[in-house]
Length: 174
Image (tube, rainbow, N blue to C red; front, side):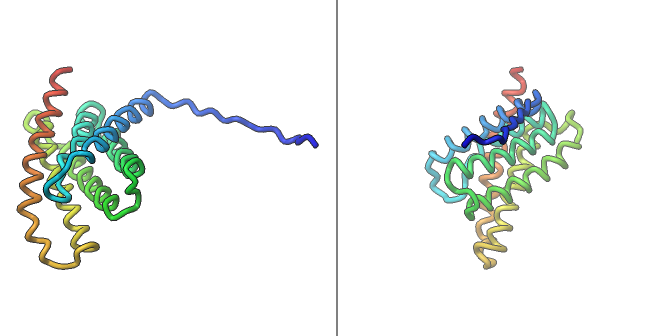
């Protein structure tokens, strides 16, 4: 018996903006996967190499593109690394959202005085604060977590500066 139902094919052509965001997000996901293979002596502290891509996108194309790239990177790396919807994924999402809020505020500062390094520092500290807040409220409901603040703040300072300098160098090479 032959079916009389016809199949309708819908084709969606991505815009150049969609293609650009997808490429940047893919690069950020690749950096996240690469970074996951780097051993860390202190759990929860990573260099955040994918944030370099977010900074470059922010500088070149604006906050909306940077937000899409950051959220796609968190979702994509969570899926690729097998941690989607895990506590680690929630921590990454919280840090990313706080980081994007800080970048939204920093993006309104005059670029004459505030560049990729200052933006990276704001994002790194917001990321760290968001993750520690979520950890305190959900995973470790004890005030002892406050003792981790200096260690995480030092990591945010170092990696925020390093990632900002790398982003500034890559942007200057254009």
